[in-house]
Image 1 (cartoon, rainbow, N blue to C red):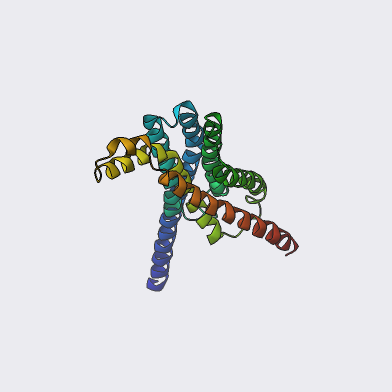
Image 2: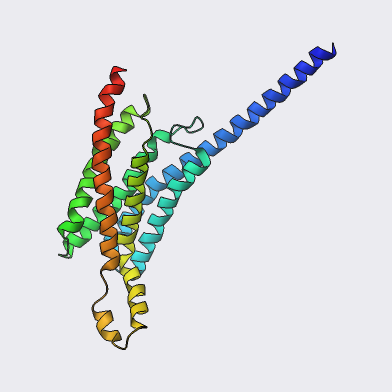
Length: 235
């Protein structure tokens, strides 16, 4: 009799622990999915701020802060809910697509304003177009297939997203970061007017460097994805 009671108590304890673990997983997954959706919502707001008045300092600050907030949600959703295939996530498959929407919207807006101002150069235009086109194709396919079959996570894909987030953040923030850098340089020299008349292009160029890295990694991961997909289907 005592043995039976002990077994029942152990079973009930294990069941309660399992229920608590499931509830915690579900809550973390819901928060992660919410942060994923935040990135998709922020995308048109960031693009609108860029198109409206970039490179105005105030609007550049607003757009860069909102973009940085969206980039941080990409880190927090993995921290809270796990990877996009974690059991508690209902919209984990939308994670990468939300990244593509946020980055792509910002890049399209920057392409528009730089072209309108007559300062669009190939060093920015080429990697931006490569990245946008690659993500449009892969994200569309992933949105249909990823929710059904799942695609193995790729560390290189994570590095691609990190490089793109950093690069676009710097590109958006370059007007006010250049001003900060110019003020710092002006404090080191007497020729302040010359520095303000010729602001440093370093922030924009560093952002372009990260964007080129992201574009190269995006092409590499796309090739691996399409090569791996037929093999996965055969298996």
